[in-house]
Image 1 (cartoon, rainbow, N blue to C red):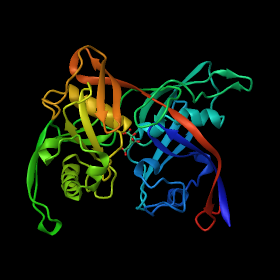
Image 2 (image 1 turned 30 degrees about the horizontal axis):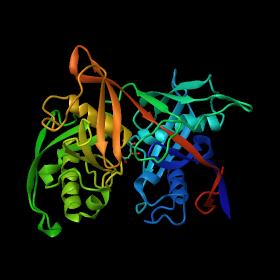
Image 3 (image 1 turned 45 degrees about the vertical axis):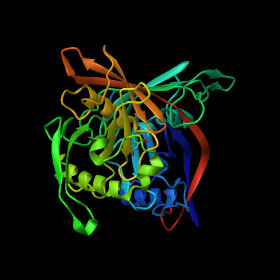
Length: 377
Ligand code: NQM
């Protein structure tokens, strides 16, 4: 016997996964997590028995409900699963999956289209972060519908789609206690030798920062990389990944995050000089696999570090002048432009971030889970 759960399977930015109404999932969190693991087919590195795509970027779930706070139209809870682990992490954000929330809500009739475009405020429950999202909702013979086709292109997704704009209102200190969780814009960190792991001691400079996503940013050259390696090369470099993980465990403590061994954050970001006219070049580990592009709030956080005097981006980043600043973050499959509003009274303070995403409804239907996992409401 199986239980059928209504779901829309959607791409949000450079991520993909099933979206659910919160009311269609179990209220009990332990049961909900078991259901999500069964839906995605985790843990199994191929996710052969579920919807997951055998990669962290395709092991994501969106859960949506009517807004619970005044002025908020929709609440969004993001869940990060992993192909080969039994974790369901609802701590960090995902700005990519966020792009599909409003299309999902319109498709499911949670809210009505407003006109040729529809703008609503979304609260991400993971970190209590609000943003305004705008999608195109043109009139059709069947009433107003979400438009998916269009001319907007985002690197990391083939083809073009209708634009979705996201304006983040306040993202500083999403998971950490503040923007600079160590209290400093730059830290010099020593990782001790661990002969059992084949690890030699090393010391380097990092910027630990959280403007929507906790990141540890470091110069690629400090780990012997150019920062222009391909994703496949970096994923195959077990020595590099071992050093990055040791550094992550150490900096996680410094950032007040405790033991991050089983957590999907902080993400590790290697920096190098831009090669394609952008502000700087990145390779982002999320945290154990190198991203094919870069996360949305990770890009916002990288851009924010670029405006801070003394961060590890100094001497690497080539920043545009003016306010707002459009910071082009280069990544393995192109670039990600983030518009940052800077406080005129304090050029070190980012007050808002705006960016472009796209999304698409891929499939609608019911996802089946064994009734031994959940017998249904
Ligand atoms: O940083 C990947 C992604 C993300 C997260 C990750 C994201 C964000 O690209 O806002 O979108 O960092 O695991 O979907």
